[in-house]
Length: 198
Image (tube, rainbow, N blue to C red; front, side, top):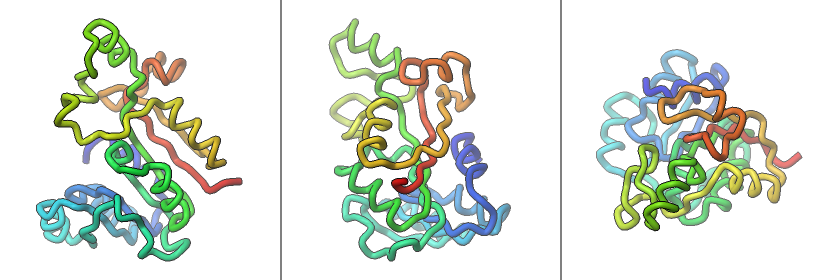
């Protein structure tokens, strides 16, 4: 399993009810079902991913996240997961609220636009950064809502979401001392486990 998915899997309790938004080929849900007895559902917009999920025996729904999560009841899941998808939806703030309405907690991961390589690239070249963790050019990127870790945490404070855990890693998905000391400058990708407003 991919290193980022293993980090997420370690945060999910056995037998939990899980919804994976933008589940891709269903690798996380397949592993969780097999190794932790999780009752999980995936959601993706790509028909090829849907087919792959079904071949793996993963319960999956074809759905565009920009259409919201209104079809799900409150407290339908223990955990809602969204891996590097937050930056590609139209209204991430609304979607986060919906995730915490239908799930008791959520896990969100996204790349850091405030990383020093991005800042340096923009400063030196005067163009939108193309770096390892943000490899697309401005005109073909799926990312429409780039943010920094500080931006995201400010949103969490405004909405009073509890940040239960945060892991900041490099592009190798390993923890580094500088990323822990100054995450918004040296962290590449963050994993946030969030709870509802206190």
